[in-house]
Length: 262
View 1 (tube, rainbow, N blue to C red):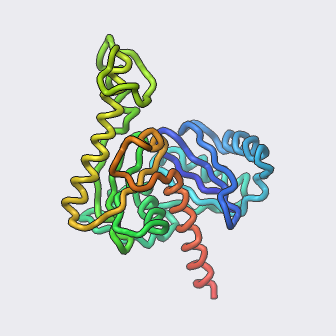
View 2 (cartoon, helix red, strand yellow; view 1 turned 90 degrees about the horizontal axis):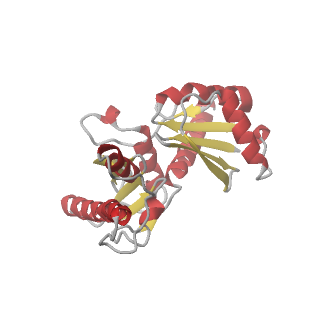
View 3 (spheres, rainbow, N blue to C red; view 1 turned 120 degrees about the vertical axis):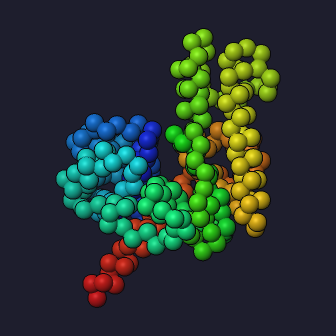
């Protein structure tokens, strides 16, 4: 079985694939102080709820935008899984053409999303990943990474309102009952929620107009489900794009390694 680990700035996703299907997945707050032992205790406990054991894992692939977490995650794989993990950006061949002047600046998560989306949907594509930041990435018909947009995430925007304005409370992000807020809480919810809906729909339209070809828009990420039923320009909601990309990259690199050994 394969353990895929996707570490974002806010959450870290762990997912287990048995060779045919994703068996289970769990999210944890990204914490740079978690040790290999912490990961082992936490993950083994959750795996048992799905009749899984750490001893069943025979490979691991890691994507991270938090370099400080990688040391302990790598140690966890080595000590508790007895494997040397594949790490995006180190020992993994992505096979993605980056059509930008400075390809090295593109985050591993955005390239993995390009692989996952291209492997599951016909292109060209717009991949909207909603997390700490909201990214809009353009993936060519051949799977190449063509560039994109980075905007603050919806949670970050709500936090900024609370932190910067003394009288504005911290409120949960949800779809308000009406566009026009009737109190401070619903006014804040409406501004952030509908502001992000228009951000998404507006930028998708601008990208399509500039690209000049029909495109498919896919939404993924930890908070993408908030926008389902409200954002009109998103064609598919797929929360598993990143781990699908990790699975494709794992298979691609295992196959290549096998060829090199012959």
